[in-house]
Every structure is written in C-alpha cells, then in structure tokens.
Length: 403
Image 1: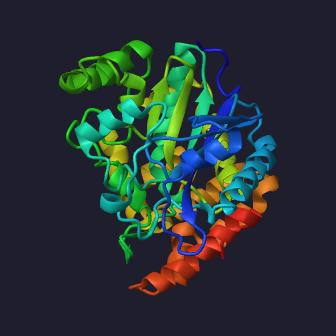
Image 2 (image 1 turned 120 degrees about the horizontal axis):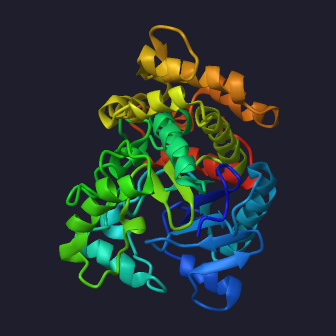
C-alpha cells in the first residue's frame, strides 16, 4: 500500500557488526542480544521509534526507524541512544558494536554463522544458491535510505533522479578500503563485492545502476520478469519474492511505495550517516522537480553512461574524474572535475547548516576510507588494524567523527 506522497516520508537502516571488545573479532551473538533484551529469540526488537533487526548473519544488527519519518534529523538522537542501549547489553558479555563497511580481517569462510531463527529458511535458500560464506554476503555493512512515492508519475521523477546520484555516492560514503587484513586498492571494497556476489544469476543485481525504467509496468517487464525467470529453478515454492531478490543499488518497492537506496557504506557514527542521508535527499529533491524537459533528459542516461563512473568512485572515491556532461547535471559547468569537487558544489548548494561540521570535515579530509588509509601503513599488520578500528569504534560510541 502506497501511503505517502513523494518525499513525504523516509526510512533509515543502519547496519553494525557485533565484535569482541578486546580482539574486535566478529561474534555471532545477535540472537543472544535480542534474548537479553526481550527474553525470547526473536528477529526484531521494537524500541519505540527504533527497531533492532537482523539479516542473514548472526553478527550483524540493524537499527531502523520503526515507521517512516518526515524529518531525518529528528531521528539522530533516537538512533544514537539505541546504539548506546545495545552497547550496554553487549558489554555484559564482553561484546560491542563496530562500524565500517567491511570488517578488515574477518574470514567469512570460517567465521560466518547464518541466522538460525525466524526467517532462517530464506537465508538458507540464499546460501544454497550463492554460498553466503564469503565477502559480499557475510561481511558487508551499509546504510539504507527509503524515499516515499505514491503515483506512477512520482515514481518516474524519483527513479530518474535517484539513478543519476547513485554513481556519485561512493565518493561521499566509502568506508571499506581494507579486507582480508590487506589494503585492497579500492576505497569502497564493499560495493566491489556487492556487485558480483550474485553473478550466478546476473538479473538479480544487474549492473547495480538500475535500468532506465520509469513506470511500474515497465519495471515489471524489464526487471522483475527477468529476476523471476532466472530464480525459478531454485525457487519452486516461491519462498523468495521479487522485492527481496532485486539487489540493484536502488530498488523499487511498489508494494509499500518507496525507492530504497543501498549504496552507502555505514559511517563511523550516526551523526555522519544522518548528515549524508540528509544531503542526498535534498539533492534528489532538486533533481526530481517536475520540469518535463529536465526529467526527459535525465531519463536518457543509460546504465552504461553511469556504470563507468560508478566503477571509478568505487576505486578512487572523491579523486575519481567526472565527465563534464555528468557534472552539468548538478549545475557545475567546469571541465576535468573530480567527484569530490562535484560534492563540494552540491554541499555549497544543498548542505544543511545543521551538518556543516560533517560536510566540512569531508571536504577537508575526504571519505572515511581516505581517513582510515591515512592512519594505516600501506601493508598493515593486524595490530595496526586493531588500533585504528578501536578508534573507529569509539567514534560510534561518542557520536563523533573519525580523525
């Protein structure tokens, strides 16, 4: 049911790892966390405006708004308070939360434990098809943003706008430059794994950038029909539905009237996440204004047009070079610009004063991935990683930016 008009409501999901406080190794203890909170092995724990949840693996806890909200900024305090409440419960077991898009030394082939409780049949089916004991499944933490729409015309405008911002997002939110104890050479390693984790059935992810489709009927024909065709041999009982299977970087939820953007790596603290989500919303709002000629021009951008930039920002984040035609979408008339320069322009145009500290910190010091690399030697030892990621953990607990 589509209850809310375009930009009337927003949803937020923040994913964190549960780790040992001393070693920072992942610990598959989210079910025990939920038991300590409720006295039962449940899959969701509602705490008023915020709900704790789990997806797929037992070391990941998700904080999400219980109901869509009209103002993201109003949720920062509630989300942060829930981080502290979870931390308090985990501390009694010597555990804690860790932010970051990828755990820097987790070995998913050895340390993955799938969720055993409600919904486990779905996760077991995914594992049968794709092998979830690997990066891209067991070791990826992200921030999701849901934006409401009601009519097909609103979906058209929103999908056209969202598609255009997607390739630029890693240049703002990359936080995963390390995996398997090594610097990977990518600022957003999480997204590199994400785009290939379902290569066995390529229709599920596509090329991450969604196809240029702008109505529910067209979406059904171009995207959902191909997903259903490829999954059919593995899904005879219809356990897996098309909304869960669609793994593009932004997915259309016609059943609830929203588009969910999935390309943001989780940041070091709630304050940073909310700041970046607020900025993205303000930019998408501007792009989705109903001037017909502009929308038609936006719709003409193909997957191929946007995919190469997406690969560049995965690799280089803000240092990625941006085509001048793409920069002009955002009103930046300049040749040979970087993705960070585009973001600087957008921050100047749309950045809220409430989050000036976050935006200026990004402009001065780069993405969280850049800052992590500045603190690490080129070939870090595990001791180096532990020292840096302990600092990262403290940023989450104090709701402060990582220096």
